[in-house]
Structures are given as C-alpha cells and as structure tokens.
Length: 338
Length: 236
View: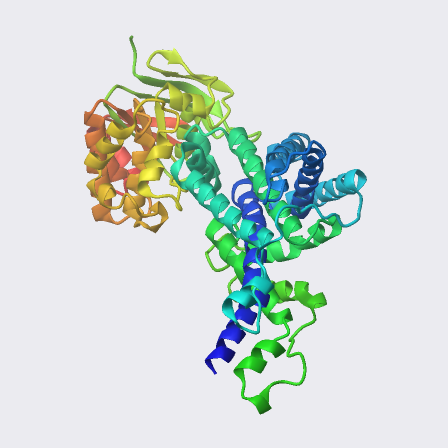
C-alpha cells in the first residue's frame, strides 16, 4: 500500500509536477515581460512572443558560433554563455523599434488600444525577421549533460517501479527563473531607477513633476523586457525546442498568465504562470497510471483518464482566461482591469 | 533683490483658442501665505497652473526670486525652487509613504534623509505609516503625503491646489496649521481654496479672482471684513 502511494507520487512528480514547474517558470518570465509593458508603457504588447523568438534565435546563433569555436559550458548548455548576446541584440531591437514606432504614438498620447494594434504590426515584422534569418524549422540547441536525475538511476536508487527524470534544462529553468525574479524584484523595490519606474507606472504626471525622465524609464523598461523575453524564450527552447510558430503560440498562455495574475502586477505574473502551466499539464495528462496505483484493483480506470488531448492545451489557457475575466477582471493580484 | 518673491503679472492665456485668464496678477513674499479664492470657473486652478508653467501664456511674465521663469517647463520650475501639489492624483498610490517622499526628492543628488526627517517631524503620522502603501491611507493622510512629497525638493515656493478638498473640517484645520508651520520656515505658500473663509483666516494676502482677472486683493483679514467680498464670495 505504501509502495503504491510512493509509486503514485513519483509518477505524479515525474509527469506533472516537474514539467509543469519548468513550464510555469518559463511562462512566468514571459508574463513578467508582458506585465512590465502594461504597467510602465500602458499597452498590451502582442509582439512579445515574437520578441522571445528573436532573442532565442540570436542566442542560438551565438551558441552555434561558440560551439564552432570549440567553447562549451561543459555539463551546462552552451546557450547559457550565449544568453548575454541574445539579450543585448533583443534590447537593441526593442530600443530601435521604440525609436521608430512606439515613440511616435507615445508623443501623440495614443490610447492603449491603438498601441496594441501597432504592436500587432511590430509582431508581423519581427515574425518575418526571425523566419528570414533562421527559417521556420525546429532547432535543437541543447548540449551538455541531458539529465540531472535519470529515470534508470532513480529506479536503481529507490527500488520503486516508477522512475523520476529531471532534465538539466528543467533544473536550469527553475534556478534561472528564481534568480531573475529575485533580481527583478530587488531592482524594482530597492534601486532608485527601479522605484522611478514604479512611480512612472503609478502616476505618470506626478512622476514628470518629480523630475523623472520618461524616455529613460521607457528605455530601461524595454531593456528589462528584452532580458526577460530572451531568457524565457531560451529556457523554453532548451526544455523543448525552438520553432518560430511555437513561440508565436506561446503568446496565449503568457497573456493568460499575466491576466490571471492581474495585468501590471509582477507577483501576479509569476502566480499566473504557474496556475496556467499546472492547469494545462494536469488537464492534458493521462491519469491512468497514477490512479492505477491509488485506487483499489477493481476500480482502476480502463481508459487513459485524460480529460483533454494535448492538442487542446491552449484551450485550457483560454478557458481560465475567460473565467478570470468574467469573475475577477482585475486578476488575482489587483492589476489594471482589461 | 527687490519686489515680491513670486511675481506673476498680467497673465493671459487658456487651453484652447479662448482665454481663461484675462490679465491675472499674483505675487507672494517670502514666508507669506497667499490664497486664491473665487467662484467656480473663475480660473483659480488655471492661474496656479499658469504660475507653474502648465498653461501656455499669451501675455504676462512669471518671476521667482527676481529671475524670469516665464519660458521654463514645469520640471525646470521645480528645479528652480517651486513645489506643486496637484488637486487630484497627487501621490503614488501603490508605493509606500517613504517611497513617495523619495520620489519627491528624485531630482536631488545630495542626502535626502534629513528632509525626510523634517517631513516626518511636520507630519508625525507619516512616520508611523511610512512602510504602508500611500493609496491605503485616509484622505487627510494622503494630502499630507502629497504635501510632504512636494517639500522634498526643498522648494522656496509651495503651491497647493485645493489641499482640503474632500477632507473633514477637523482634518482641514490641522492641514491649515501644518501649512502655517511650513510658511514659518520661510517657504512662501500659494494656495487655491474652496473653503474661502477658513483659508482667508490664515492668509497674509488674498486674491479674489472673477472670470480670470483680479477682483479684490488685500490681506486675508481685510477681505474677510470687506462687506462686498463677504456678500458676494463668502456667503454673507
């Protein structure tokens, strides 16, 4: 009986908790970027998914460059070394986009609806740029050790029937996300520049009166968004694979996460990321195995006990999104209502 | 330096084609409290905005401490020694009281701790609430945060746009007491007030504006005693 329970727990950890935690951390980083844009720049940036794709693409190209030079990070993926290049290039792209596009509309004091539509245009341009440079195909760029814990080793160590595997990319994802989030909160809450960003988000006119330079706040926000998008995209790519179209689709769960948590609220973005990821994974997971261990022999389900096919995982984000908008439009952590 | 500390003369201007101010003149000496009163739509707040550079002037000049600042943007006027407390949206609601004060002193490069301490000495309740989000405070306390924020640049002229709007009479009295205290430190005060009678009681000089122009100008006490002012603007 105890053994069954342990096996069920290991199976649950292996197939639900570990992948959902890693995926949730990736969504949370993406949602943080979206929420920062909403809070400081006051619009919903539809181009965020493609910003992630661009950042990841540059990181991949830099990874290939490093590999060609014979430089690797040993057991860790080389992409981690290439990450700063991706962040810098993406920051450059976003700052240039702001100068060429968004600044004009900011000076016109355009509404957030207009800026949202503008960002759709930006999205198509970035979309084309990425496909033009790296193509539409799947790219795998993870190297180094594949597993932190392999299923076989775990079985041998524990003596259980069920194995537990933790991929290096999953461990790195969670660790990096934690470091990035702590750094971001430290920046926003402790530094003069971070506080000036929050002040600008809170009350733009009063921030101007207090002598806070809006263009500087906007530039720093774009740089942070670039870093968050590139890191989120690269971690996702290491964990799964890089394909431009997948990144465009990632926009849905990321938006759902940001809205569920409360648009404009960084804590909400993180909570939302994990809520979405756990819901997606739990609803599309076939529970047959876990239930088989837990239920008495006769009651074990014959079918897969899978509530939704994995093809419908985006529908899960959408259902949660719609429910939140209906019941609590400002999200869990009182962001701006959409 | 001769003449009043703040001297705004013959201000004429408005937001669109039509002028709201028709030759309005305001001046405040060092450490004085000047109060602008008048009926609704008289251009009281507009006159204050014009002094602060938030309204383009077609005619007239504004000088501060003998320096002509007519062409300066509001931010530059803050640097020149003006502090402005808007009527609404005058705090950073999601930030703590202390962070509000820090943002008030954003332009300063020197140590702002002593000034924060001065603000806490003036408004002791803010010290108790310094780690609380400003948006969670009561109306009167929020006004104190707003005034405190404006004091952080160590202004020589503090401008208040209806500081007592929407607060209880007790809180209003207390705010006026604090404003007198601020003036005693040598800071000039220019204030627009809806509660004309109480405001004129503490005013060294009062301006009654009607249709964007000066109608009466005198000491606060003299205006309160003037039968015509009482009848038309103070409700008898």
